[in-house]
Image (cartoon, rainbow, N blue to C red; front, side, top):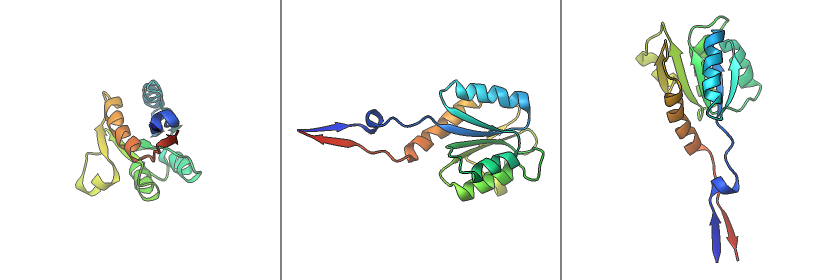
Length: 144
């Protein structure tokens, strides 16, 4: 008799990890709290430059949520471009109160959220579903 143990029971997937790049401290705190309430891990960066350093330090993450206009050498679109090139499986959400979605930027992100953002959670949950689908999973077959 074979008993098949589903992958989620054998080895539950770790929580979704979100890299949040936002220079507005209060907004970043609110968004981080909302994401954490889902049981997800949030790694905060106050600039695209800081997020890029985290990317190249080897930080593993499933979702990137970034503002576009931030202080520093790089902006959120530069960050999105690097993440897309270095980690194509990572899902990317871009938010901005100034930039409007343009055809030239569409390949850099999966969703665009205009600021002020009333709800980041539902769009992120949608993106997270595609992250989980892409993660490898294995079933265990126990033979008796």
